[in-house]
Length: 113
Length: 120
Image 1 (tube, rainbow over the protein chains, first blue to last red):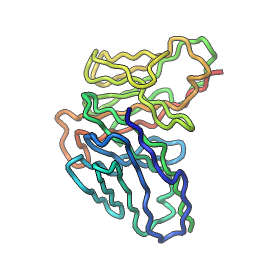
Image 2: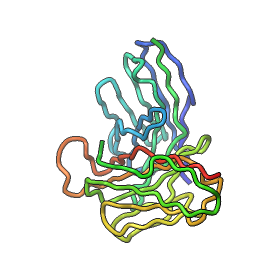
Image 3: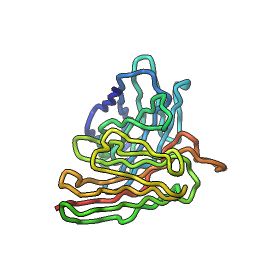
């Protein structure tokens, strides 16, 4: 059974710092990996999706990398801002017919002004 | 916003009563999902649908049933609610058919705003 782990569970940084969030998964036979952001009391917002054949994806200040063979992904946030404060979740899709995702527990990020 | 709404947004009910949550989409996505989110457990899949009247179980399906009679609606029913079903429920969609424009990738899952259910 696929297990997805995110470390650290919580992170507090000063504004302007570059930071890295980690995601690991136990079964490397994934189809893709997706990073989400969740604000308190809200739904999930998709940030980046990396296909298994890709090594990284970028969107603005966000860069996600994928090393499928080692079962790892990182989300890099450049020049963090207080508005980046949220919980970040990674999820993997295995080669299944239903596009189903297995989620990690999330990293709760606080960026202090 | 991928055109997903959930209703109700909040509900308090008593143990043993039936509850139905509704997910409605306007984007003609093929796949629809119901997840629950609980502290310490993260997001877990309850049921999903891969087309009208085509559904299957997820990781935590016991005590739940679903129905999808038309593309845009996916209903989650708790036949007899229990306190262990107190949770936040999220609907998600993916697999756009005929969608065009940036941001609507086939594999990306888009989530609704959630329904907070409390079973007393």
